[in-house]
Length: 443
Image 1 (cartoon, helix red, strand yellow):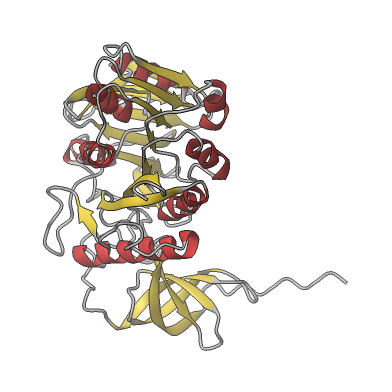
Image 2 (tube, rainbow, N blue to C red):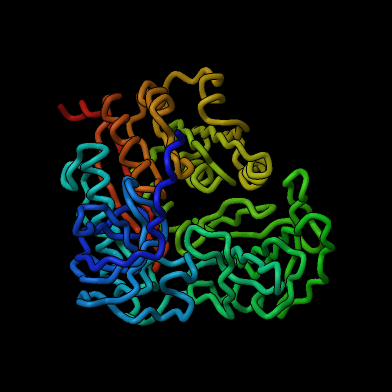
């Protein structure tokens, strides 16, 4: 006989004591029967009523929201955003926590991932255990920094109104304003318009220029709306068949400013979302690497050339930089952005495929800024064979960073320093820069 389907526990409520924070914007708790709960909208040490949002009997864990706070943490505040809370917008994880508490929670996650996945204590990683706020983001509790320069709005198919996705859901939470959106995004007034026929609308406000851009993703067969916004803006659309991005009117790119240079970023390509992020990360990487004139360097997953340009500027006329990037449009932008550096070369393709074909057997410096999944064992093994005197690893995911640091240790490298930056306030995301060097250095 077929096994009976397991009973869904969605909607069940449990009174629980909240334990430590976990990676992903939630905390860990256990029911009286020992069932593990991943609870959002809670803080360590609280006693809450948790309502199950996902899971069934016998599952390894359940997901839940704290729907009633019985004993509150001293770090709790009322969420400033009216769209935050159980079952609502999923963009922010920690609206209910004081700013300093948010950074401590992120530090706890980094420390736990380092220990569990890399076997490293903060001291062994050269980290002081803190997460540093970006310049201008030290605000009192209840005030929200307007930092997000790129916001992708989901469009409610029944109303044509813009909103944001609910946590782990395709459902749209209608909003009239996103509190973490940068001023340049908010002034476009995306939430005020009718976007009937659109799947999503992405709004971009460049840093260091007045460039504003809207990227429309239409539903199959839909006509593009006439876009007349409150500010001058270029408009692009995503082709429903190819996924390519095409210009409707205005520039097909925005100009982003960082490290004293202007960078062209086309077609909604990747750029750091916080307006201070690019300069913050370049400074941390260059302070860690201490480039010397005439050295050679790799910039892996190089995007539009932010770190490659910074390296080339510091390595001088006799230095050389090779950048590798998989995105075709990003490679075109990188080559444009770095055209004044004759000893910079940008290759298109996946790092694990292109790097072995270059024939490079040694290099002085390496920068890698991999996607959220990390670089992986094979790529790290290749990098450790090149004998770089220093490696800078820029990471947006502490779990991937910790895994890869473990692989670097297998390859004979140790972490010299690690710095963590709160470049995504109100969310669980955090950016880290690890500087590595050969473990035998100085011995």
